Amino acid sequence: MRIGTGFLLAILSGLLWGIIAIAIAGISLTLISGLPSAPVLSAGAIAGAVSAAIIMLRVPKLRTNGLYLAAFMGAIIAMLAISFAAPFTEPFATAPIGQAIAIAIIAGAVTLANRACLNDIESGILKRYTLDVVIVRVLRGFGFVFFTVIVVLPFYVMVMTSLKSQQSLFQNPLDLSVDLKQGTGSLFNSYVELFTKFHFGRFLLISTIVSVSTVLITLAFSIPGAYAVARLRFPGQNVLSKSVLLIYLVPMIVLVIPLYSVFSQLGLRNSIIGLLIVYPATTVPVALYMLQGYFRGLPVELEEAGLMDGLGRLGVIWKITLPLALPALASVSLYVFMIAWNEFLFAFMFLDDPKIFTLSRGVVSLNSSEVPRQHLMAGAVVATIPILVIFLWFERFLVQGLTSGSVKG
Image 1: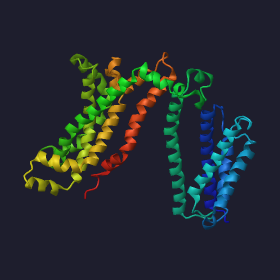
Image 2: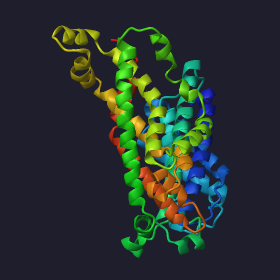
Image 3: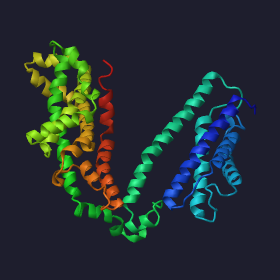
Image 4: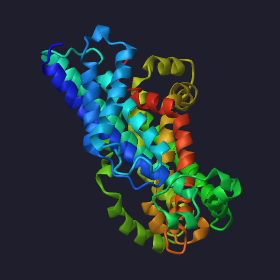
């Protein structure tokens, strides 16, 4: 084994992954067990460095599963030795099973991360390209882990808090474990009260009506508008095509005050109709922008053939263009639906009557000293789950629709 830039870079990679792994494990242990742990970052760093050093003892083609197992064991031994068998500052006798699992997960995580980053890397002098490859791998992995934690951690806290009782939250706010022995009735009590006492079923229905109506109104205006910009020739076509997104240059908070004044005078402020005017006004521009790019990518010869066969322009749009544009229409519909479902600013400013609250406005109404915290978190879960399921179900249409029309063919 030759010690060069490859070995030094592997040590740095191991140090980084060790710090990340023990920090995440410490946070997870605190939330799951309620143990107020403070991870010893130096122990994780040394464990990661030892794991990387063991992997680099052999050239890439001689690295076997046995070597990676040795790296795993080396990480555990180094972590326990540096921290004096207390990698989370608490004695190992305190929650021994949880700490043992956390230590094994840390060692496994740093070993797998080092393997992914250093799988084909020599320990000697590296070329500039190989050096860049390792750096990109480490940064990409760090970004993936960082953003995953940013997304998963709040969602975990939200779900677990919604399943807790008021008494358990007062006893230990850090303990977000779930006691399955209490039964489903007690476990989901917050959700039951949410729909029986706080009328969340009505909020769900209103948000569904508003979101679906916004999608239909947006498509009704954006489809002919996008087709006209993409296919027809008229004065100001290029200007209109490039300026449809100008509304997004104006912050929505700037529009709230004049709209509030105008809607109050017209009697539209505390009504669903007012939202159905504002929401499409903010979603039509982006729908126009997305659809016109897709329409431009469709073969114009198909539409010309339809015109020659006796179809009018509307017939061509209905029978030829729209069936071919289904992926784009699905992606636009999903995007508009998510905007309307999650919109809060206008709903908060315009709606005062709890009987017509949207879901986002209803969740905010739970944020008071009179409502237990677990009910607020349960409301947040109820507001998140439907849009999450819809997004995951239609994700393929969203990706296909966003990329269609970007390349002419």
